[in-house]
Image 1: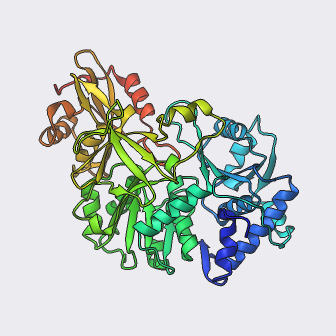
Image 2: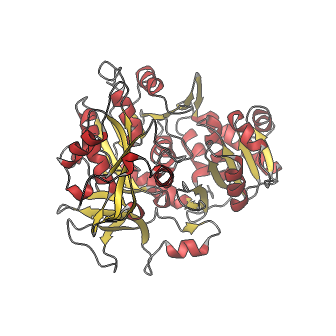
Length: 511
């Protein structure tokens, strides 16, 4: 084949095991042979709409087989796939579609309102409910083999946009391939793997850490429309799920379920998390059930794997993000870019074949993201122990300075997770007349529990230096999140500013 990219994967897998089930969605099963044929038909149909090599094809919707088929079809043509969050409003979508220059938008019924509100987008629209199957059925089955190399762009993935306008991260076919190879080294992925894809596929980890490695290996991916605790437990029992990826909030929700202790999790070999530091108390809940809890660290810009903590270190090094992936180099540096000593916090820099070449149509942002010698600047703070294991401390931009001391909110958040009444906690730095900045904690209380702010601070004070204890505590029903599930801390800072006159806004903890 001349196509060395991801678009060739369905045909390569189908020639080995065409009758093996590739995807399950609700009550539907799709084999590898069917994925190959349907992707080819769709590619011919997209070509009929004018899609050529280098064009952008966008997809908007929840997890669905059409997402996978659309991606492979675009890649068969040498086009670039642009997955979009179904949670976005029309103005946000207008910006991303315009900035990427998407020529075709395939969209699911649940997004019809947002699509109907588009103002600037003028490309072709393919509604999943009415036009998709007809378009696909009219496509030819003749094989397509557009020459494509590993350096050619495969995806444009938009960042969460926690500050400013989102940037479109470009990932090449080589980025995807090397990330998959890293997964094969770090996780014992088998041909009989059954992966539960409950996290959204527009997020880099669900797509590249779970679905694509499972697909290349020949396993089965069970696609869930969205995250649902009971649905997840049902799917594990019904399909014999062996492997799940999720963020900390998802795994915390499972462990809090009344069904947790009695649920049949015997098929589950390992779970994998990333995207934020994981409280060790949560990891231990899974280890107590005999489940290997693997952690990794990375970003959209690293496709995403940069470090990984596999089964061999999941107990002894619980809470660590592991060591660099096989095809990755990672270092921790001081502000002058000299390497930090073991135990010394610094910024994480990453290099390797899974690192993005840059941002779509944003040369200034691309230049700012790399050092002069080509290392990607993550913006994350971490330290290494004597064994080379990386522990993520926090985002550089989330750190605040209180009374001259650097404070990393993730540290207080991890301790707060151990309080029996706390379901979730997020801490941000806010202005303070005396100390420059102070911490403000936003706490979601577990159902049926109660929590007094003073008692919460006392709990933290027993476990943290006083300057790390948030001076303000706000009890909230839920935390605002980005499309990829990360806490939107800019919203919390704005919320604090709007309520700073309330009694709880008075600082009671001195550094």
